[in-house]
Length: 199
Image (cartoon, rainbow, N blue to C red; front, side):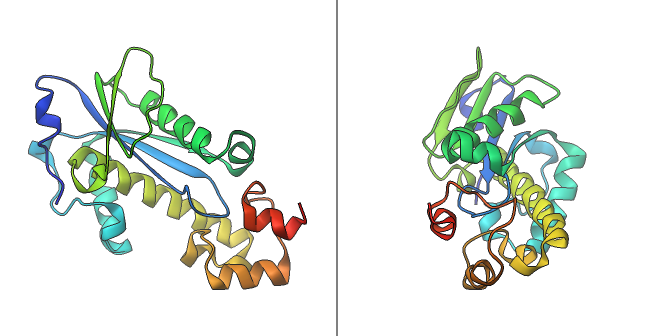
């Protein structure tokens, strides 16, 4: 389970954990969250969002947004196509940090990719959402925020099943693409979508 050990190596500093959701899907935005968490007021059960049920993620999301300083960055599919997914993810992460009420001194980001943040120290943490409470909290906020966006997009285009597959390339999503073609929320730079477009 994630803990506060990494954060404790920076005593007295304002520390934000950062994570993203939605790099792999074929449709919809990439979403990042930045979270500054107080371990003394930390909900029980925080973990890597991928290891939690949707019901548990939703419960923890509601608790976290009431007790934490958090920011969210959302980069839609057209910018993913323009920037590529790595560039779009870094932009979403930077935007998430900039939406925090208090400017952090240290940012812990899940994975191995840094992003520029002026005078803020950025530290990468491999599998950070399984190690750092701050990053795990960010993974929950990013995942739930994105799932809710995809639920809304599903109402507009229910044929793709985004309320259950979140835009990933599941067999049902592929079948719907073959039957209905793509829509405006698909990432046209992604190979399976480009193939459908004949590009």
